[in-house]
Length: 340
Ligand code: PHE
Image (cartoon, rainbow, N blue to C red; front, side, top):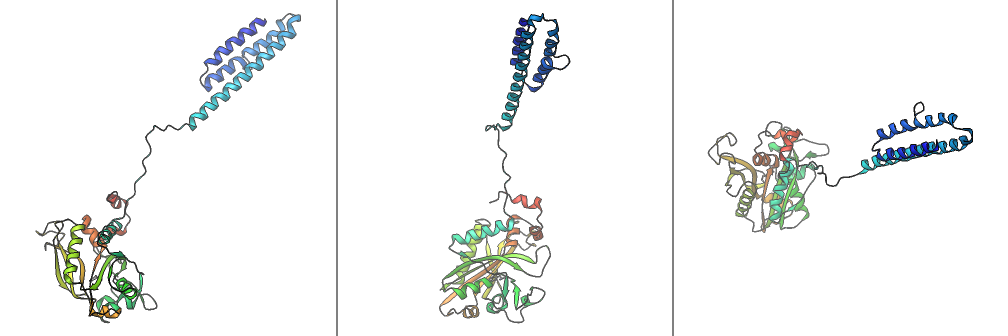
């Protein structure tokens, strides 16, 4: 009878060694420790058949075996659980990673950075100014006569206390000249506001103003600078032309066109069959403006230019509705991912 217990122990050990998962261990437990048909149950039942002089030894050996099997199975269970836990913690460094989604600049931001980069390489400094401006900086000091249409309610958003939402970034040239002595070489990017809303105008838009003042600055410097800028921004064979125009704060004043980026000058829908695209206003700083900021106009001359970032972006990227820039449509914006 006792040898029977030894055999049970041996087979149990063999079977336990072969167990690989929780399910196999559970069937082993049922096989040996199951309440109704478990092997140890059988062993206990058999005590009755054992001759009286062996009963106590058999009983104690049988109990020991049951305790042994129970503890071995518990141990194995913990081992398996431990292994499963280990596999959850396991980190396979050879697996391919999850690539991060790359963001991109908004086309207006992209264009602003391109414009700034070109002028920074020419030695210009970037200067910013307030969006709510005084009448003096936005109009008066820039030689806007009282009757100028830009002062009209149609164009300007008026605020309280003689303030306006700046209608251009030109007031930053006044602020800079009021604070510094020549030479001045700055560009002023920023948000501007006019009361307008159609496919080429939005009430909130962006400009970059440029200003250069020193002794002996001429219109030729202006032309050379703008030519260079256009060739850098669009392409090395870009052709520019200056058309006489009027802005109160420059004299002479001009509008700058580039040969159409779409048709190369033949005439198309983009250039309205003219072969040219207007890209900015420019001119020699008006004597009154120089005097308004306390510069001696007998010694100093300067040029200024101003362009709409929205318009430059439209021409640069072939966009035909500027309102797209303000609608946050991801399908539109995602096209600029990775451009810069
Ligand atoms: N400030 C002008 C505008 O908003 C642009 C400009 C700037 C023109 C400098 C000439 C010189 O239209």
